[in-house]
Image (cartoon, rainbow, N blue to C red; front, top):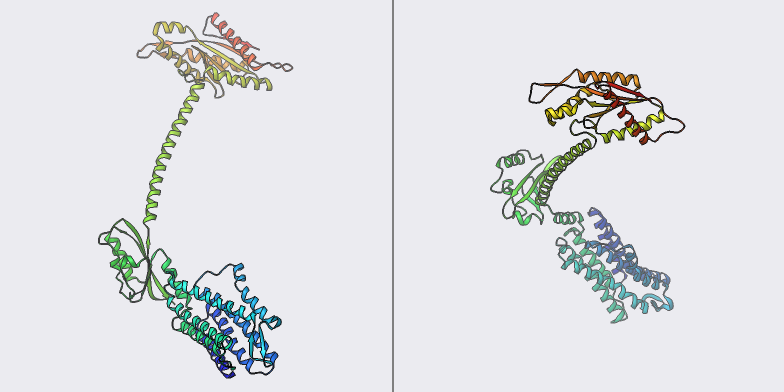
Length: 551
């Protein structure tokens, strides 16, 4: 009866060759071909056991058959995971899964005390099994049961609608092989009805399961992962997708779009039907004209739907080209409502930020101007606009230190408007202020850019002449004196003019102590007292003149 297993082996081999030459080999096809190859080992080993009288060779094929069954059981489980699109376990778990089968295979090979198999009548054509077999066999059947459970989970889940039919076909194959294996164990091992072994039960189950697999591969395209993955990807995309053939027939529509357009596969698609009743007709006409007259061009349009809540949808149309020939179109629908809302909010926020920034810039400019004014007020005289005494004192402290350190001569002029009290008494303080401002204006005309003019108090003004010796200071003082005397100042709201004269005290510093430098503040106070005395000397001598002192 050895020929039964041999015939089954030949049939399995023929199926293996048929699958190999008739399908486009994918990764899953490769896995199945390897799996099918190991399926052929069982009937081949059963045939080889019966084809030889050598007990050692028989024993080798017995062990090879059961090791092969262990590999089939483990491979079946992994193949089921791959088939049902389950994520493969981690590397550590992947190493633990085949461990029971490997331990059983190792124990079968070692066969301690003949606990796995014992020969009958000196050969293994007929044999008895020990405890290792009764431990290993349920383990291997357990792998098949786990595979059945994984397939059951796939069938009752909602995430695999396209492969349910194919998986059912594979399920039949697994059930058949498990049933025949269990029948083989019951009839030939547990409850033998005669001394003769009924051959080929497990081999027949393997052949029938392989037939189911081949039917699933060719008829149901169970391994056509490209189409399965293609549809799964399309259905998980949030955008609506519509695929048309070259006759504008719908060949694919995904789940996102189906509830909105109420279209079915096979319907003829009319581009005008996707537009709402009201809208920008001119813009739509351009899009529709491009769609109808220029099918090779890409086109897109934004549409506002107002059925319930406003909904912005961007529609894009692209040709599907194969070797340069258009075979159809793909139309995508993207909901832009949230994006438009975010853009509008962002634009509004940007406008608010721009307004706030402009307000801040305006405030900053006002603060800058205010600070400038405050700085000017801190160092200038409010009436004349020239520097005040405080600023001049700070500058002179710095200049005196520099001049003392570098032995640079400098001069100071102290000016006083002659008979200013009489002007106030006769014409009033408004005219007095006008006289002061007019006098300052005349003095400024004669000064150099480096000279510093400051109001010393009342009608007195002080001028610092840096790097200026007594001769240069005297010439500048004469020029100031003559300029003021030769220019009359007009009385406001009157045709009357006033001739003004000034008295000037001139102090020139030429020498500085080297061995014992003076304190700048003390030196400054001495200078102010000295130039004040010189000014009063000019007044005592008749006013409208210059009195000088050189140190």
